[in-house]
Image (tube, rainbow, N blue to C red; front, top):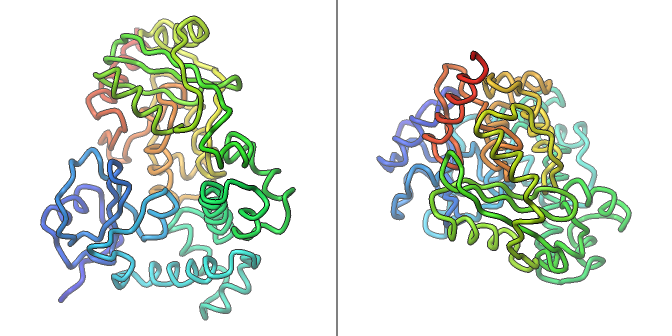
Amino acid sequence: MTRAAVPDLNAASRWRAVLARDRRFDGAFVYAVRSTGIYCRPSCASRKPRRGQVAFFPVPEAAERAGFRACRRCHPGAASPADPRIALVRSVCRLIDARPDVPASLATLSASAATTPHRLLRAFRAVLGVTPRQYRDERRLARFKTQLKERKKVSPALYEAGYGSTSRVYERADAQLGMTPATYGRGGAGTRIAFAVVPCALGRLLVAATVRGICRVGIGDDAPALEQGLHAEFPAATIARDDDTLRSWVAEITAHLDGRQPHLDLPVDVRATAFQRRVWEALRKIPYGSTRSYSEIARAMGNAKATRAVARACATNPVAIVVPCHRVVRADGDLGGYRWGIERKKELLAREAGEATS
């Protein structure tokens, strides 16, 4: 069977391959379904999801970094890579995952993979949008979070995940977990989250916050569904509706949506990898009424090959509007995707463009 060409695949061609269950694309990418938390190979015989629930990843490791689990029906990790760069990256990812406690130096990893440090670094940035060291850090943090949920105690979890000391994980906890490791391990237990749901120009707006800042902003047609999503994100936190506490922040966001307050500068309290945080900070610098392409954001961050990783960071943004991921479009002008619906993205951009030119 002839394999499909890989480098120029876009979201539309990937989706066509999924709908056709085209085996030629097995190994070229995987697709993940947000509603189930599972990722599959293109030819998987499982029931096809709605397009809005689907995210695409170049390799299984990237899907797992985003929190998805492998399908037990199609075993996507067993598909042979169609691109030699993908094969190289996957082999090195397996080396890193097998020894989480060993430093991921480019020299050692490239020697093990029989390549040069430069080629390995370029392959990682092209396929995953991160360096081998960043991949190791993110996978180690993901293992730590899993261990915390299973063990409920910090010390055994951090050593099992590959951290050498408590100080190494606590120094990263504030930026990457948004709360202490022990609190995260209890599913956010002990964290108080206030939320409000109000009508807005785009339907219903949910704003939720801890004492440190806004932790979730969602847009939808159904208030109960928005509340359910909040509880799913923070299952053990104490969550209560509190319109009074959030009144000023909600007013600023709704005024922004109505074009009465172009600039938003609100505090946020979100969990993020180092790469996600850099992307989200770049998005907050996009002027009101303007757009940037995914590739422009990648270049501005000093990594022109990270376009797909930038798109994934936009798709996982938990605080819509506050971090304006709707201002990022494809290089050809196509709107791309939007977690809260492409029509809302179109409306947001139209409103901002009208306000900016008035």
